[in-house]
Image (tube, rainbow, N blue to C red; front, side):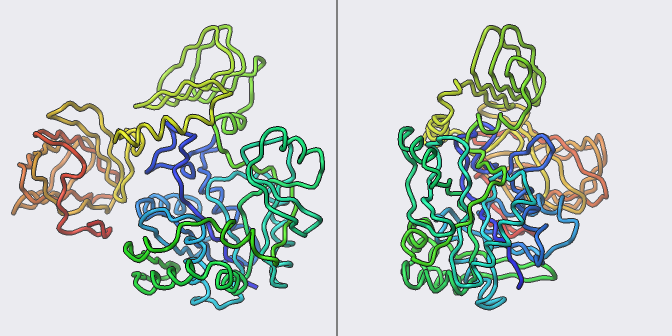
Length: 471
């Protein structure tokens, strides 16, 4: 039996703003050990027996960022495959596309282990044991879900009523009173959102319970572009047909309707890290119950979580607060209201404010850029380009750019000229000129870009050539 961990990396993690953004969602948040939640999910699957390939379903915009995350940790050089969605369409569409990919590549007996990219599991040995039991049931044709033994009367999770491995029913997020009843009964488990099944089994279930989703996904896959290489494959889902797939979760579409569902009760040290309280609890408290990530000066402060990686935070005479500082946004919230942080994210998004989507430092396939200062008619960026990487051949209608090399060597196309620019040298690119920046060296290229013009939006870009396929 070959096992295929299938990581679903979507969503925005609005409750973890301002660290989580649309283009830097919760799976990419780094924990104290330096690893992201996504990296932990990859390693969780990769360390299981019989795994030679990890499949990831993610947004097209997050593809290169996801690749970079995996390159840091994939020391065993496992094969990686990707299904790239143009936008979110819920878990049924994601799982259907993964099933169709695996069935075509490996047959109906391919064993899928569906994992969320943004969960934390602290007990790898218990996880491996649970997966072994799940695959045993899945070999018999069951659709297996993982139920977490509840530790408290949580209202933020769905529940599964279970009798051994038999699922009695799925229950929506309950009131506090109901959650206390569930906890006391000993019959209920938290719904983890992890699954295990043979590709043929879930395919048959989708044909029975959500044929519209499966049919629409098949049409989309037939229209989608596939790229293959040594130890690598990529399916880029075609946007027009993908949009026609009904939006539904796999829980509603299949799991709650099928009589073939089994559950593995388990205790894994599991958390969905769904709020700042949950994330803060991963940091050891001091004698006053404060959890600090970064540098803070405290006087008469208790039960607070404070995170700041750039500035010193001072707090006096406060209790039970969440304080999270980033270079362009500050969150202050009472711990009892952390679930409402998502309303701030929604307000920023509805107003078109960049702070819902981007950090001050933005990751690109070629490296990063950081906005140092901006006003209505100028913007100053620090640009860092990885060795051998290249920005697209492009042009701007409304702005000119002045590039100054701070460190390294730049190969520049500027109009009809090709230049090599060394440290402390510069070039000026007028609006309307085709241009490209490349790092021909073996060290990172660092430069300062000064933009000036009537409009400085990131959408003022016309691409003519791009090695990353962005047009």
